[in-house]
Length: 293
Image 1 (cartoon, rainbow, N blue to C red):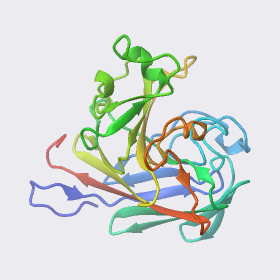
Image 2 (cartoon, one colour):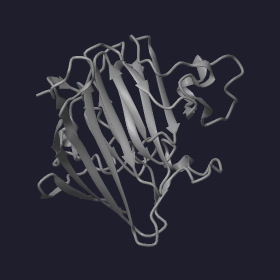
Image 3 (spheres, rainbow, N blue to C red):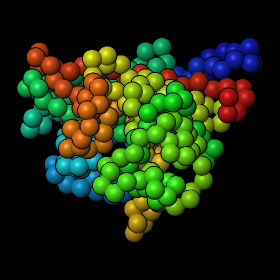
Image 4 (cartoon, helix red, strand yellow):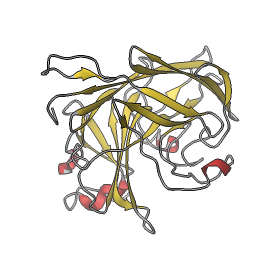
């Protein structure tokens, strides 16, 4: 149900969420106003995975921790069953950490509160790996000038000489780092690009009249938004379209790359002396009387 409006201002669209604790704590639905925001993939076997297996891209939102790329593939939590601990609450036990999550729906907003417990000094990357069902006209709105790290799959799309041999990433500025426009998702063009918007913790996805806002709160840890713009460019054998907009703790896809530069504040989240890190993601939606506002 939509909130009432005078016909000119955007109106709030209450969101509802569904999750699958048994299969990795995956978010299987984020819906409101007759729209489903989460993309569903055609991959099979998601219900049979075990820790250490290659990632099965079933869509939805996956909890990727302690890394996204690298080892283990998409982290260690998505492939394990979570234990339900109360309404909207669950926990997963991994070898080096425990991750607890509580999801609530308050005043139309979806709020996900997290707590990771581990030995002090433990370093990790977390991403709310949200794959979204978007039209070719959709766009991502983030603060202009945000430092944006492009990853090697983008190298051949950049002007000659931009990508230096041996680089793990190239940093430009949003929305067109190194001259590559990334804010428009566009029609399928056979490309696949991964990027990290360093420091971006409040972004919006605009798709016609609909807007999805994703906000990450965690003042004491490095924050970012990861972008995966796969326009039928991956995988090579059977490419498909998938768009990821992912709130992130840390500033790299692969935890193993976190020490490759001396970014102020660090490239990975670090468990403090108290043994816990807490953070929150808030998702809200609006609908405008006019498209693409």
